[in-house]
Length: 278
Image 1 (cartoon, one colour):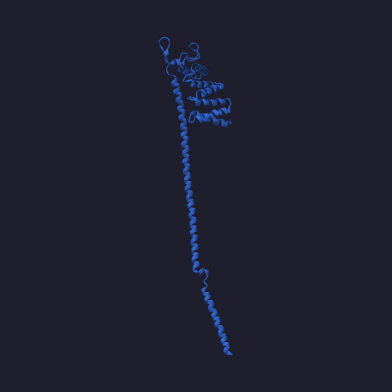
Image 2 (cartoon, rainbow, N blue to C red):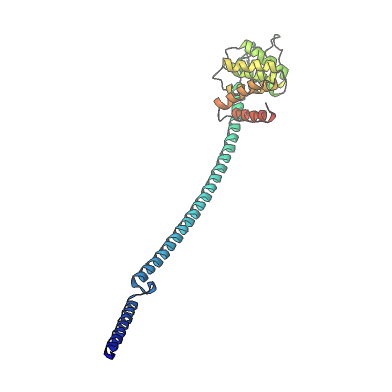
């Protein structure tokens, strides 16, 4: 009886010991995730990857900032170059305008000198007449309306031009008008026709001025006075309040006679018309 109890007690103790040993073994084998070498390595790799990503992100932002600074610098340089080019262009435009004005003045002087050449001819007494004949007053010498009745086309042109320069507009008008009758085929006919228009214009006889300037552009399309004639046509139409016709003539000057003083003046008058609402 006692032997049976002892065996039973011994078996129970042995089972408990085996169970305790098994539990201990299992506990020894169960390692927490924090101590698992594989997990530790993975965590370390994760941290390194995160640091690398942050570095790359910061580097990209830095590069973008540097590129932005470079672009801003290049923009400032380009803006400076553009301002310099604009200044150079404006300076060149002013110089060009001054040059054309100077050329126009010189051409006018050449024209005046050309027609003032001495006129040599017989005076009926074996002598000669000179350039002073060009200044003879209108109405002398046989009652002719020419300023220099016995003179050439050049002498009469110069005499009429002198009357215009001296402000004797009515006498200049009559002289140029008679010149066109007496010398219709003269090489100076286009100039004379233009200055005839000018005499009408300064006396504010705009309808007659319009007719005179139109004859220039219609009869002498190759004349050196063509641009000026179109310009004065525009001015005259403006004075007559023919706004559309004025704009047409002025635009033609600007379009067909670029880089001339007449084109510059036409542009100025067009701006004025725009400001006035015409």
